[in-house]
Structure formats: structure tokens, C-alpha cells
Amino acid sequence: MANELTFEAIRGVQSRTAYYTVMVPMKMVPRLFIFDGDDLPPDLRAQRVLSKARVPQIASYLAENWDNYILSSLCASVDGDLTFSPAGKNGALKNVGTLSFAMDARIVLNDGQHRRAAIEDALKTRPALENETISVVIFADRGLARSQQMFADLNMNAVRPSNSLNILYDKRDPLAVLSVEVFRQVPFFNRFLELEKKSLSNRTTKLYTLSSLQQAHEWMVGPAGDKFGEETVSFVIQYWNALYGVLEDWQRLDGGSLNAHDLRQNTVHAHGVLLQAFGILGGALFESFPTNWADKLQAFTAVDWSRRNAELWEGRVMNEARMNGQRRSVLLGAAVLFEAVGLPLEPRMKAAMDAQTQVAA
Image (cartoon, rainbow, N blue to C red; front, top):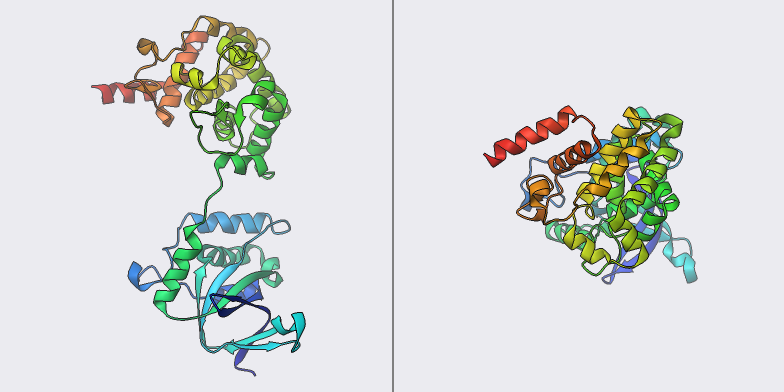
């Protein structure tokens, strides 16, 4: 009928109730699905408030990767009669057919409001997306309480993958590609990087996470991973291998005479904050000494990396003997490294030192 919307659909059953999966053209998404506005209190809506930062991120992803993107299904409830017409009476065809409901039916998203808003934004800059489709799982609306429960159930078991795993699988981000290449090309990291978990357990044999290494690379060569042009990848690999050559504790760990747990318990350079500081140093060394930067690393053979060396590390990368991974601590740790190799401190390090002095006062 002219006053109905009809979609090809597949029927399924959950909680003894029929639901349907349909394909909706992108151009219909903004006007078809309702989002409960921010003006409603939480107890009167069935979704979270839209994140103003997340929507542009997804929209940019769609517009920039319009020929190579993926979006998971939306989930919606229709407040109106659902009419399913199967393609056949028996066998598999009884669950394949068309789904129809009134054009003026109220359709509320239970999950996917950020994707819906991002699709609307992406269509403005990439109109070619309008005839592509997104799958939508449709349920019959059974009231606000049920919609709120659906939202809770859909998100109850959702677990965001760790940053390390995202980096490992991300082929779009040049910094991630660099970090994975370093993992593969630097034997020490190949053996002692945690690739999946966001943090290290006491029993792990790993020393750093891949996400910590990526943070070090961002400090070293910038978010685009190309600060030194074509030499970037080669230099970064050489740098970490050269650092391995002067850090006796790394070598002892690699040789089996020291374990990762004891190294983390007793030293500062076994933590991500110093790994990032090493990243800052690497970039500065290559800029200042492009041909003999590796010679400067020999100074580290005389550095006391022990956490008991409070005079050097307390108030910089440690607070009351506990490691501190904040940005300021990375810069303060880098300042120690710069002084060790004879590099002048950068303004951002001096600013971090001034701020730390004010806090201490």
C-alpha cells in the first residue's frame, strides 16, 4: 500500500518473539529512525546522549573510506503493526519475505544512534553513499521499559577491544602500521610485546604493550608516522635495536637471567612511561645527530635505572615510589634522558619541570 514501508526481510525468533532483519538504503536512515533528544531526562529515553566527538569521527571514517568501510547493524523498535509476508509456506522460505509497517509508525533506535547521526553527516560530503545499505534488526515496540532494557542488554556484554589489538589489526593508521612493522623487525619487541591486553599482569612474560610502543612512536615521529620521510621506518627500527645494545637489563631479560616481573618491580625503564620518553629522545637524536646518533646512547650504560634511585626518578616518573604514566611524567623522564646524553632540554620539558616544582611547593 502507498502508506506503508516495505522491506525485504528475514524473520527470526528471540524470547519467543519474532524479529526481522532488513536492508535499509543509507539515504533513508536519517529520516526513518528517531533519536530521543538530549532534552529528555535519562529515565524518559531509551538511549545514551549523543557524543559530540564520536559522531564526526564515524562520519569522517565513512566519508574517507567510502569504498572500504564496514558498519555493524542498527537495532530498532517499531511502534506499530508489523506485517510479514513469507516467500513460501514451508522450509526456509517461510522465514524469508517482506516486512511492512505504516509509514507514520514511530521507529526508535535501541542501538546505533551514533552510526545513524554519522551516516547523516557523511551523506553531506559523500553523496555516493546514499544507495548503499545498512542492516537493521527490527523488533516490535513494547514500550519504554522494554526499550530501556534492550539498550541495557545490548550493551551489558559489549567489551571494547584493547588499544594494542586495535593497533595490531589497523591497516589504515600509518602509525599503527609502523608500530607493527617495528614489532616484526625488532627481535626484542617480537619476544616481549603484549599484543592483545591493555595492561600487564604480574605473571606475564611480556615487558611492554603494543599500545605503549605506539605512544612512543607518536612522540618520536609524529601521529602520521613520517617525521623523517622515507628514512622513518629504517631509523625507528635501528634506534630500538641500538637501544637494546646498551640496555643491559633488556639483554638479561632476553637471555633468561632476569624475568619481566622482577624487572618491572625494580626498574623504571621497564614501564611504558620511560618507553615513551625513549621515543621522545629518539626523534631528537636523529634530528640533532643524523649520522652518529647511536653513539650518544652509550651514556645509558652509566645510568642507574633502579626504582630505589629516588634522587633521580622520584617526582619525575615516580610519585611516592609508584610509577606515574601521565604526560608530564613522560616529559620529565625524557628530560633525564636528554641530560644523560647531553642534549639541551626542550621548552615542553622545562614547562613540565616548572609545573612539577609548583606542585611540590
